Amino acid sequence: MHDLNLITQNAEKYKYYLQIRNENPKIIDQILEINRKRKELISTINNLRSQKNSISEKIGRKQYSNEQEKQELINESNKIDQEIKNLEPVLNEIEENLKNILLNVPNIVSPDVPVGKSSDENVVVYEEGEKPAFDFEPLPHWEIAENISIIDFERGVKLSGSRFYIMKGKLAKLQRALINFFLDFHIEKHNYKELYVPFIVKRHCLEGAGQLPKFEDNLYKDSEDDMWLVPTAEVPLTNIYRDEILPADVLPLYYVAYTPCFRKEKIAAGRDVRGIKRGHQFDKVELYKFVLPENSDYELEKLVQDACDILRALELNYRVVKLCSGDLGFAAAKTYDIEVWAAGCKEWLEVSSCSNVLDFQARRANIRFKRTPTSKPEFIHTLNGSGLALPRVVIAILENYQQKDGTIKIPKVLQPYTKFDKIEMHWKY
RNA sequence: GGAGAGGUGGCCGAGUGGUCGAAGGCGCUCGCCUGCUAAGCGAGAGUGUCGCUUAAUAGGCGACACCACGGGUUCGAAUCCCGUCCUCUCCGCCA
Image (cartoon, rainbow, N blue to C red):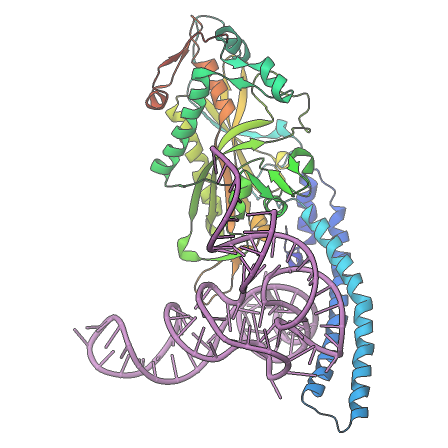
C-alpha cells in the first residue's frame, strides 16, 4: 500500500514503476482523480459537522433565551444533519473504491533493480560451490525415490489429489532434521528469535502481507469462519506487530519460524508436476526482519547471506539471482532468489526468495516505530526470505548426494540431526 | 457449546447524556534542584484525516474523527439500545 500524498507528488515515478513491472500505469491517474474528489467531500462534510457541533454546544451551554429559540436551533441542526447523511454514503463509497484500487497497486521498485520484462532478464549475481562429479548418470529425485521406495506418490494422490505425496522413513526424518538444523542454525549463528505461529489466519493478515485481494486464487480457505491457510510464514510474521508502534531501540528484530505452506498453484498449473518440486503443501523455515528504513538495503544483503550459509554448510552448489523489475513479486521492491543446483533434473531450483519490502507491508498492516519517545511515528521496513524451503533442499540432497548403488549420503552437518549417514532401500508396505 | 463479567490513552484506572480527547497514578520527555544516583519540584506529551501557513511528507494554526468494531436513539453519546469480535471466570467436551 502506498502513501496517497507520495503518489500525488510523484505520479510520474509511480507510473514508471508500474510500467517496468508490466502493469498498467493508467491506474495512477484514476487514483489522483478519486483522491481529489475525496478531499473535496471531506472538507464539505467537516464544515457541516463543525456547524452542527457548535449548535449542540450552544444548546448544552443553554445559550438561548426561550424554548422557541431552542427549537429553532434543533431544527437547524436537523437540517444540517440531513445534508451530512446524504453525503456520507458517497464519501464511504469513494474511500472504499480508493482503498480497493490502492490495495492492488504493487510496491515501488528499488533503483538498483535491473529493468526487464521477464525472468529471462534476471541477473546472476554470483555462484558458489562445485557441481558434484558423478561416474554414472545421476537420476532425477522422482526416480531415486521410486527405486529405493522413499516417496509414495500414488497414495499421496489417493489421499488429497495431484501434487500431494507421502514421504517415508528416513526421507521423512531427513526433512524433519533439516527443519531443526535450519532453525538452530539461524538461532545460534545469526541471532534470529524462533517463533511458533498459527498456520491459519484471518483475512486481514493476508491483506497486510499483500496476498489479498490480488492473489485469492492461490489460497486455501474456510469461508465459513474467514480462516485462511498460510501460503508462507511471512503472513503471520508480518502481522505480529500490526497496529503497533515499536520503540526504535528494539530494532532490528530478527525472527525465524517454521510452518507448512499451502498454495493452490493455479498460476503454475502444469508446471513442475513431476516429483516434489511444487506441491500444494510444503514446509519452509522463514526469516523475517523488522528494521529501520535506512538499514533495510543492508539488511537484505545480510539476509541473503544468512540463507546462503545454510547451503554452504550443506555443501551444495548454489547461485544468487537478482530479479529484474518484470519478475518482482507484488510486495517486493527488490528480490534475490537463491537457487540450488539439482544434478538429477539438471535444473537450478529456487530454494529461497529474499525481499526488501520497504514500508509496503508496514503501511498495509500499520506497523510503525518511534525514533525517540517524543518523535512522530514512522512506518517500519520489513524483509522476508526463506531460510530455506524444504522440499527443494531435499531434492538437492537426494540428487547431489546420490551414490552409484542407489543410496543417498547424508551431508555431515546433518548427521547429528538424522542420526544416520545414508538412506537406503526402504520397505514397500 | 452453556452461564456470568468485561473491553477507556504506553500501562493501571475513574468516568452512566452536554464545556470529556477524557480525572488520578505509574511510566515517558524537557527543565530545576541536591557531590552522583534515588527522591523532590515545575512544565509537557495520544493517533489519524482535511484545510490554511511553509521550500518542507520540519514546525505552527484551525476543523473533523477516534474511549474494541459496526450500526441505532438524541440537538448532543465513552456514557443509552442492537449486532459482531475479543478477553476473563465457572460449567461441559476434548489432544
